[in-house]
Image (tube, rainbow, N blue to C red; front, side, top):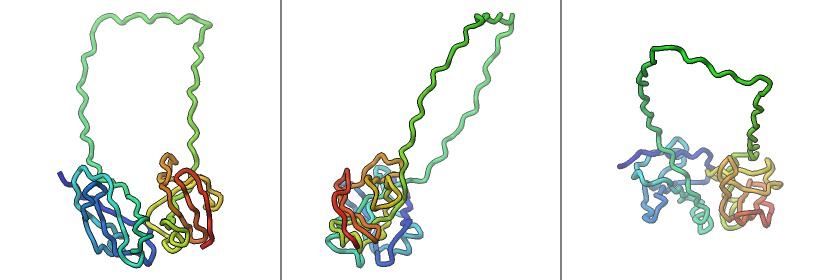
Length: 197
């Protein structure tokens, strides 16, 4: 069965586009090509099979270099949710008869509840729209990008972790990333090098 998915760029630099949208699977089927920056920012709808869970978006314009082709990052597909039907509860019969006598609670013995520890959420900052590619200068040139990233510090130069999600549970892939001021090389677990843009 097919589903319509609306792909929207939340941030796109002025030199990006036109775009190609592909299925992120073994077929790499092109869903649309020559999609303008304006169309992608407004939201571009494509029809995909229900089994498709990720769509790749790649710029074909000024950013269509060997470095830029390495910077494609998958965007998760979020289909329009279908409302869940609610059911009407079935009434149950209440037995008629004598009311049971409550069992007395011994006095002087008050149970003490055991507290359940609440995990402290890990703070992340973002989203940031870093330029991303295989070199520091290339990442500077590609800033800003449409893919969102999250850090463990609000200052890119002081950050030690780079995430793909705001909960900080998925690390970003190895590459160079830039905020337009500096570019840092991320090896998948830590920043290992930095250059000025």
